[in-house]
Length: 100
Image 1 (spheres, one colour):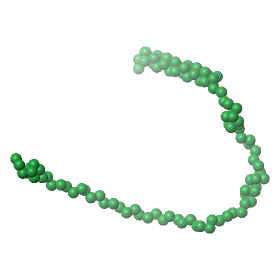
Image 2 (cartoon, one colour):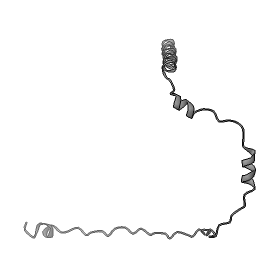
Image 3 (spheres, helix red, strand yellow):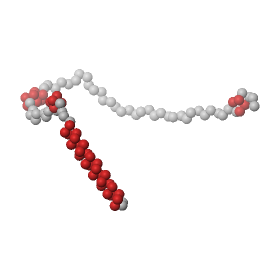
Image 4 (tube, helix red, strand yellow):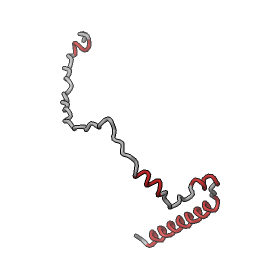
């Protein structure tokens, strides 16, 4: 690469990077989150209700009345492809109705 090509590439990259930073700063300063959205994205508390977790562990196990049927894989039937029947070319008399 020539020196001019490298300089052009570096200048173009710097312009794009500076524009990106400027647009990000403008976007961050102008965008706001409404109170309802801020309430919906509030962080979740990091504590667990241990009493409820113990109640879930102590539940009685219920077995289903209908047992599941295990599917046994079977071989799929193979299809044979037959070529289409060839149509014999018509003679010129038959195609034109016999008049020449």
